[in-house]
Figure 1 (cartoon, helix red, strand yellow):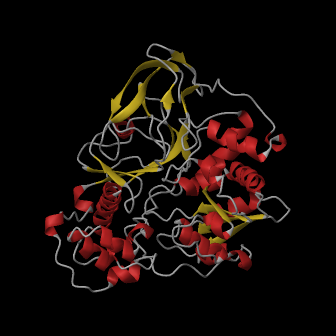
Figure 2 (tube, helix red, strand yellow):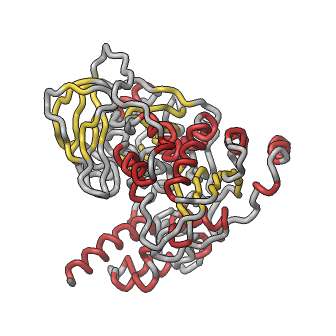
Length: 457
């Protein structure tokens, strides 16, 4: 009854019944945090600022041990075009540059910043500027200067996405607010609480790309967000909010393009090839918030949730905060052994509480052993070719056959079955009755495929 009442308040033209084909409907489990406003989290004694927390080349330090820095000050520069700078999330002193644990396992270089406990931590670096007077190229440079990356998880430098290949003309901007991963509500709360920043960021993106219109897309389990956004829209009608069916992985850019504007992005092509620019709502809101003040990314909203944490919620966390520091304050007792950065479908498990929050980390999930059916690779049963993975794959691949080729280490043969069109959403592994870890097979296969091709050259 409540949902029906909400739907009638929206223009039927903005409620889309179509969606992409295939996909799955895992339990949403968003009830832990979807109604909890964003809270600012405490500053830890030390911040671990990874130099490589974005796609592309790592940042290059421009500070030395013993040097004092203020909150918002650049501490590492971009190393080329596909790279972004790093800014100090707190006022303090550079302690050292050392290797620290990462979510994916290997230790990587990071700047260790000791936070001054007596500081107000006011942002002291930056200056106001009129973005409306800036040229598109100046805005692209400002986006890189701010250290902006895809905050939805990919962490791809945003300024690169604002520079499409020659010949591609973008006419429509898509703002991705679907957040289809179970448990996560970061984007949901940003759409509700930072609607003005999001709309301002969308207008900036439209001007840079020369787009005629923009569509903010969200799923029908986030109707409060849709209402908040529609209230913030300008009157010119160039930006609209559309609601699509809740289904996983609706947040993938190819699925979103199909559902919102009925365009299909070809294999191996960028969205700009069909006139689209696709950006996450958190990234877009940061553009609207940071660019007018010449500031960089120093914090982000993180959903900390799951049955293994006592105080789940949505928190504004300084970049570089160790996961252990967060859990100590939210009721983690060490009995929950499964820690996942990101969502349960595409996130990475972590084994160290020293792993820091990065720009691309929108959520942190704490699970108990009794909440999971954990399968070891040796526990998987043989594939019986039931076809469930084929029915679930949103890219219309044949995960069954790809999995068999991977098991036989025929990595080059997997090209014929479009291995690299797989974006590792996990639908196939989720529905597999044999418990075959197909996503892990495909991740290894991509690495081996690239290495074999490089060796052949």
